[in-house]
Structures are given as structure tokens and as C-alpha cells.
Amino acid sequence: MKIGIIGSGNVGGTLGRRWAQGGHSVLFSSRDPGSDKIRKIVAESGANAKAGTVQDAVQSSDILLLATPWPATKQAVADAGRLAGKIVIDATNPFLRDLSGLEVGVSSSGGELVAQWAEGAKVVKAFNSIGANIMADPNLGGQSALLLYCGDDAGAKAAVRDLATELGFDARDAGPLRQSRVLEPLALLWVSLAYAQGYGREFAFQIIKRA
Image (cartoon, rainbow, N blue to C red; front, side, top):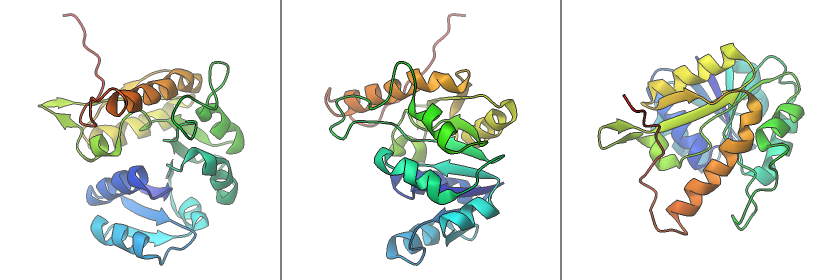
């Protein structure tokens, strides 16, 4: 699979490195592909990784991971240009800057806004409700961390499910893209438990079913 990373911070860097090390062709995009930060990420990712512009990522990839800070997301989508037909994994969260709540919620979501901005793209909300440390290793005490995803295109969701499963997640379909309205508050819950409530970052959610 050819994967383009838009937003090479903790989330984009971690997922991109793992996918590249797993055999996928990964392009980390940046306004400055030659920066020390991008060169370091590419070197850590191995022979399957390279750097380029956002346009390079769009043109050369089957799937795009959008992992930008929320205030930069709309512009990042605009910079990407035409995304019709592309699978876009939306790992963003519309957090307020002080993490006290969400900029978008109840009647819409960040995921739905991304789908509007990226007209014609097959948007799947995923990798937004846990920390990058869990993405680096989703095995917690022998149990796989839950990875919820949602979207409106069955084929796109299947592709994202497979990418998550390869990384070791228990990937579960949460429904259509409007379910971003509940997955994004779940992300805020993870953050508040990790920091404000003192749980720390080494935990994940899970579905437990009665036999």
C-alpha cells in the first residue's frame, strides 16, 4: 500500500514509521521536506519511507493520513488540492486550545467537516481516540487496544481496518462518518483521564462482551 502522511508530528510520525517498517511505501509530507525533523523520521522508518511535499503525497499515495493539529487542518486539506476518490484517514480532533472541550460537536463533527473540505474523498475517522504511545505498541498486558473507526465507504473502511489490524489493534467498525460526533468526545475523555485525572498515558479502551 502507498500511504501519504499529512502532519508528521507524534501521530503521523509514529503511524508512518510503523507502516513503513511493516512493508508499506510511506511518504512523509512537509512544507520543508529537507528539514532535520523530516530527515530523522525518514531515517528511522527505513527503506520504504521518503519525504516530499503535500502534493507529492496526494499524487503518489493510495491512502492519506491526516494528522494535523486541528487549527491547521482546513488549510492542510486546501493545500492538498483535489482529493476526490482518495481514502483519507482523519486522525484529527477539534479540541479547544486549552483542551476544555470541542470546537465542533453534537450536530456535526471534525470528521464531517474534513469530508466537506476534502470534497469527494472517502473519509474514515480513525486513530483519533488514543495516544501516539499506544499507536507505537497497542499490546497492553497481552490484550490489543481498541481502535474504533467510522466512515461512509465500505471499501475505505476495510482498508483502514486492515492497516490498524496489522499494527496490532482490535479494530472495530463504529458506523457511518457521523459517528465522529461520539468518537471525538471519546478522544477528549482519553486525554482528560490521561492528564487531568492522573491515569497516565499507558491505557486504552476496550469492548468486553459477556459470553
